[in-house]
Length: 120
Image (cartoon, rainbow, N blue to C red; front, side):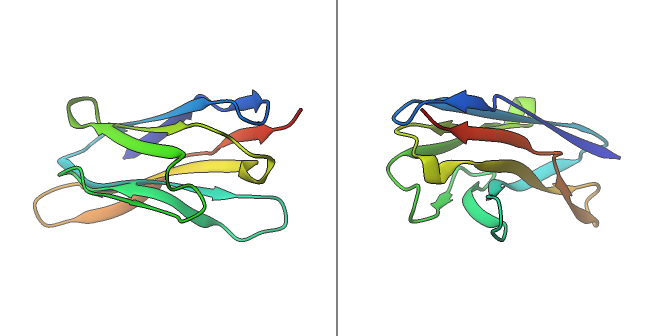
């Protein structure tokens, strides 16, 4: 089994910053793509950012230039640095990982979510 544990959410004022972390643990052979998604109240879950094992990144247009995704492969951890936060960024943020459980088997895993609230 593989577990993803997120941390770093909370309440922040508009214009502020937060850093989310997500650590993967368990029976991991390797991790391919890792990413962050979010679900705002009354909306569908949406992609925030992804990063490959080689460090290639992809961002939603709404966060480009404000958020930075990074990872530490040695620690099986992905980060999301969020700057210039806006009330529209308020959502539950979920970590995801495409995990290779062996050389022949992959599976997708999700964290439990962490709340980010941007409000004055």
